[in-house]
Amino acid sequence: MKLTIHGAARTTTGSMYLLEACGKRILFECGFFQGKRKESMDRNRQFPFKPSEIDLMLLSHAHIDHSGNIPNLVRQGFQGPIFCNHATRDLATLMLEDSAHIQESDCAFINRRNEKLGKKNLPPAEPLYTRLDAQKAAKQFVSIAYDHSFDLVEGITVTFCDAGHILGSSEIIFDLRENGRHVRLVFSGDLGRGNNAILRDPTPFEDVEVLLMESTYGGRVHEAQELANARLAEIINQTLERGGKVIIPAFSVGRTQQLVHSLHDLTAHKIVRNIPVFVDSPLSINATEVFRLHPECFNQSTYEMLRHHENPFGLKNLTYIRSSEESKKLNDRHDPCIIIAASGMCEAGRIRHHLRNNIGDPRNTVLMVGFCAPNTLGRAMHDRSPKVSIFGEEHEVRAQIETIDAFSAHADRNELLDLVRHSTGSFKRILLTHGQEDQSEALASALRVSHPQSQIVIPNLHDMIDL
Ligand SMILES: [Zn+2]
Image (cartoon, rainbow, N blue to C red; front, side):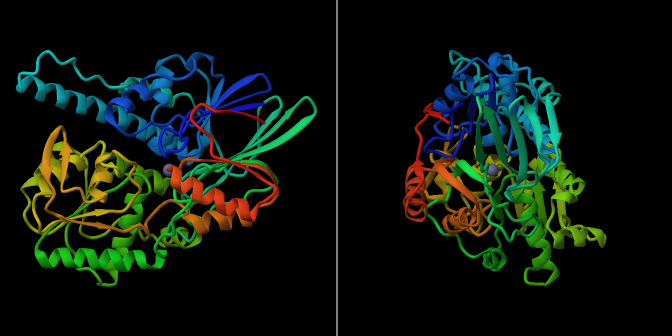
């Protein structure tokens, strides 16, 4: 039984793990690596194994840094089933087609611009995969309910448990039986904070022997969740006083619905006045529909709200924008408004057009609400770089940059440690991935104190672990 760490090693993106057991090659997660453009392109294009030799796949949740490269895997020969939770299947099929569409239109935009600039000798930009590849991948998904153990292949039983991170997000529990040995490997996926406005709390792990855990915020403590709405109101109201717009880069899945839920709350209680709110992302609209289809993933209060025919994802002055013509019309608006657009790290999608049009005006606010990997446009904004590059052009940042980390979909240091504390098992080994080095190291130090009997490892890229 071997586990190879092919991604999210000492970094947060590109999650990809290969499990070899019971004569099968099982891949779990197949995410986009996001970082410096050239390195990202190369790493996403080439797999460190033959995709045709993978027997089957599992997926913890739909976020693109976990699922984004699946259509490329399929394009390069992977034909097996992809197991995940029902909501993850519905969200992932949407997101992958959207990702293909964004890549196609971004490449077309860059090629048109290069032609206009007379840069004819540059090779044309090409997408990693097309919408057709994404549609083909969608046919390989097989969905399973939470807490329902099933035999993946002979000798391997798998259970998905709620990870409370986004709709459908799962911890994956592997019970491996080979040559008279039984090993329980638990993959945490991405873990939520608990006490979420919409979702349930992450499930504590049981009988863990080997734990493969995320450590995005292994060294940080977030603002209290109860402060999130108050901070959001303060930032919106200050921007309104200046007569500016609030631009919020947000993941289409999870963060956008949470923001809409909060704005619903703030306007209902008249803490923020009713100004136009635009969710400018076709994916967010579709994702919100998927949210409504999966009340089984909601916590009790949101479930009740829905049962009483109140729409937790709608508000009076909210417009969901699908077409790119409508999106472009937002450029002509000069009145105060709130624009929520994807992607959260600003590496793709319509948000880049909104930033390009709005970051030069000091009345406006760019509000960062999610994690941004290093070397992304989102991180540059977050770190308050005076100048940023968008579509290869330099722009001066004159807008206010604000950050709220209380909306984070990721558990912080204390929440991660609490979850481990409430879990059971021998914890023979704890492998920390999906974190920048300083964050994983900080969590490792704390775990060495709380679990002195465990071997705590922060694996390097392509490290192979004998289970
Ligand atoms: Zn995630």
